[in-house]
Amino acid sequence: MNKQVANISILENFRYSELENRIRRLEEKAFKNKRKTTTLGQQIVFLHELGMLDPIYQLPLNSFEKKAHLLARILNQDPSNTKKALEAIPKREETDLKIPFNYDFLSELFEEFGANEHSSDMAQKSKKLLQQKKQKKNS
Image (cartoon, rainbow, N blue to C red; front, side):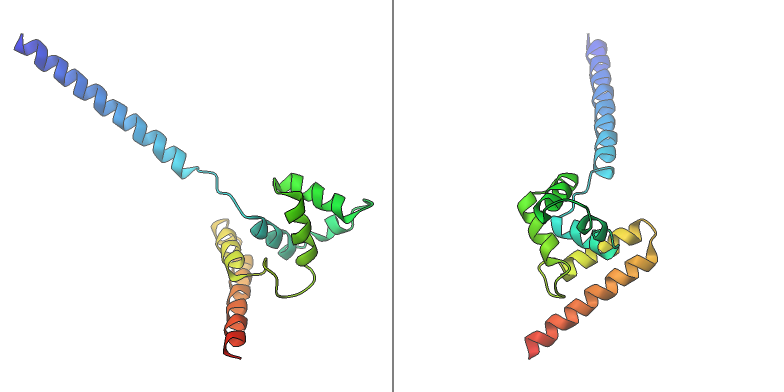
């Protein structure tokens, strides 16, 4: 009888161990391939820096709002917020979109994919924005 209990215990431990291993492997796959999300600001700055917004501005649609809705649908974003971002990004240097946080993200993204020149450009822009912010604070 004790031998049977010992065999069941060994079998249960083996099954438990196998189950733990399977769960660990699944978690590694899930977390390793976890889909990373981006903010609207990061998306718009990315498109702006690569010159990809110009073709959207030039689309032969009868309103700017339709262009914003089109882009919002592609980016899975709110049309109203996308419209605001599209209006803000080309107008001036200082916007809620052109912030070090967004440029740092883009620098890391470009580096991750081996676009080192773009990564350096984004890092320089982030640094420049930080310096400008410090100068304004000291003024």
